Amino acid sequence: MATPAHIGRFTANNPGIMTLQGTNQYVVGKDSVVVIDVALSADSNLDGIIEQVEAMGAKKIEKILLTHIHSDHCAGALALRKRCGAKLGIHRSRRGYLGGEDFQYDDNDRITFGGGELRVLHTPGHESGHCCFYEGSDKVLFSGDNILGYGTAVIHPPDGNMTDYMETLERLLGFDISLILPGHGPLIGKPEAKIREYIKHRLEREQQVIAALKSGRNGIGEMTQWIYVDVSAALQRVAEFSVQAHLEKLMREGRVKKEGARYLLLGDN
Ligand SMILES: [Zn+2]
Image 1 (cartoon, rainbow, N blue to C red):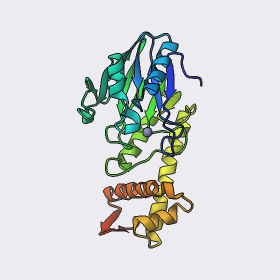
Image 2: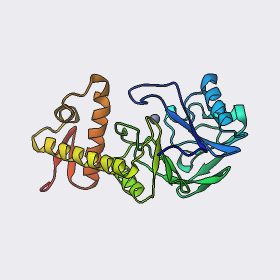
Image 3: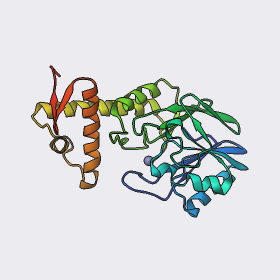
Image 4: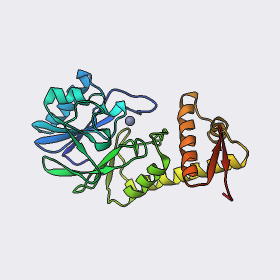
């Protein structure tokens, strides 16, 4: 599915192993538009967003919305606000985080743009204040870092929470979505399949964590090495966070307990 004409994208020049090709910054609307995420404060990045706005024939940026407060999504927000006079919004739980927000939003709020509106979905997991934005008329979901164009989202405890994340994925399955526009990587034309794949992947990972515990591996480091056989050194820490996030979910469910640095299975898992 092609992106609707009233949605544009400018990808920030911040490629990397976590950001893929760079952060996707979206422009939504006609005449007066909303910008979702501003990764960098450099003039070249703000110029790119503004050129995208002009290319769409729009006249002004009315609002800036943030999917979450990781710097690769918000570091340029105040600079863009200053440059174009847009109102900057942030999730209610992150009020004051940047020190220059104009309004807050929360789950199910509606945010208007020229020609339509976005529904705010508070979607914790990757980050506790994470929001996705759903445009119901075209069935487009701006997924931030909860669903990426390829690879999987990073769940980094303690703010990242696997229990919340799985609930978020299940909730998103309940929406009629034709197109996902992610915070990183290419657009996703088969949303339901992608979300189901994400859920399946996490459940498989959880089973691997349980199998590692059953095999007598009880520390996060040794479990990670056993589960992620050929993970690169650069991603080793990320893999450890993932294992930790799964263990915390299992502890919340009463299936695992922690003794010192060791994790132990409870009952007949
Ligand atoms: Zn990101």
